[in-house]
Amino acid sequence: MIYGLLPLLRGWMYVYKEPEGLLYYGQEKVLDTVEAPGWVLFFSGRVSDNLDGKYVRLVLEIDGPEKAYTIEASAYELKEHGVVMPTNYSAYLTVYDDTNKVYAGCINPSIPMPFSRRFTLKAVPPNTPIEETVIRPIRYRAAYALVKIIDMVEFRRSLQELFGGRIRPLE
Image (cartoon, rainbow, N blue to C red; front, side):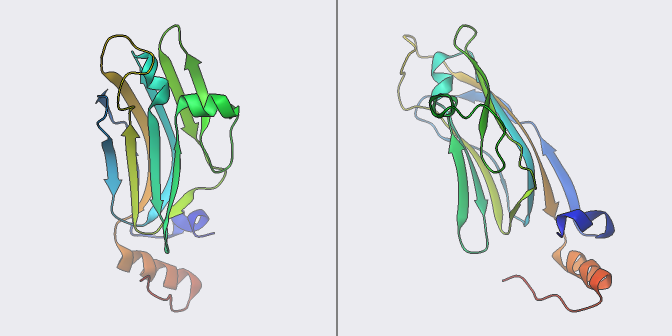
């Protein structure tokens, strides 16, 4: 409900990022952490240049008011489970191409996914080669958009103005 009222509220901003780089076997990489409440609008991730890219686990940790909600999957797992069409609150496969060594997936929720404390995005490659015979880095590229509350006092004040009452503080 509140997400739909954002045009009438203050103290928030859109965040759009496209991190890219290289992953190395056995080295988990934190791609981004946002320390604020907000909403995940969408996420897409692509790995390439390595047959083992299909085993890279992309992990979104969405910290809720009581505990973190994690969405994680690899292209290989999504293919094995047949998740190749959009789902409301999970990842799905968009590209699985062994010939060109390209794998991609997406999370496009029907309503934005809220987080109350933190949003963390990680890439976790396999510890050792699985299908490749030569150790080579795995190229990654992600794109995602968030709504981030940047001024909680102003956000709450604008909610109070809109609803004409007191809003209890988040703890």
